[in-house]
Image 1: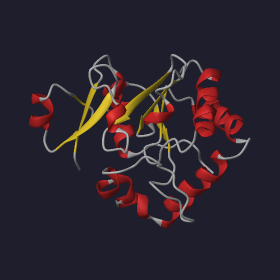
Image 2 (image 1 turned 60 degrees about the vertical axis):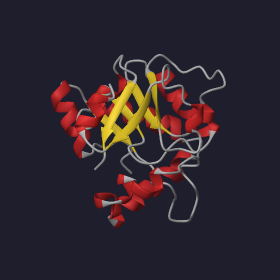
Image 3 (image 1 turned 60 degrees about the horizontal axis):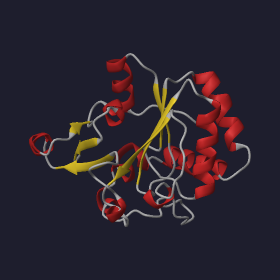
Image 4 (image 1 turned 30 degrees about the vertical axis):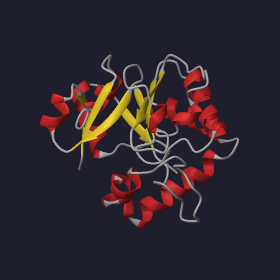
Length: 199
C-alpha cells in the first residue's frame, strides 16, 4: 500500500516551488463501513471535492480505506517514517481528504513530525477542538483551520491561520486572502488568511 501520493494540485505545486510535496489521504467524511473520519464536518459535506472525480474510483476508495485502517494501528508511525525515508518529500500535506478523527490519531502525526524535522507537515482541518487547549505542535507542523465546520466559532480569524472558500478570485482578493487554489504551499506563508476558490 502506497502511503504518500501526489494529486494534480500537489504535482503542480511541487514543480512551481521546486519542492517535493506529497499527501496522505483518508476517506472523505466516512469510510465504506460508515466510520466517521471527519467528525466536525458541516457545510463542507455538501460540496466536498474529495467525494467526486478520481476519488470515486473503486481502487482509490479501497486505498483510502486501507490507509484509515492502518492509521488506527501501532504500525502507522514506523511505516510512515519508513515511507518518508524512501520517498524523500520536502512537504507532506496531511489529508487532501479526511481529517484528524481523534486525539490519538493526531498524536501519531505529532510523533511523525517530531521524528522527521527536515520535512514540513501541514494540514487543513475542521477538528479545531483538538488544537485549542494548549496543544503544542512541533515547529515543522502547521495547521490551517477550515471554515465550514461545527466549530467555526472557535476560529479567531484575526490570529489563527484559517481557510475560507470564495466563489471567485476577485472576491478572494478583495477580502485580503492569499490565493492557495493552485499553489498549495501558499497556505503556510506568513499570511494566515488562506483563500480557496470553489471548484
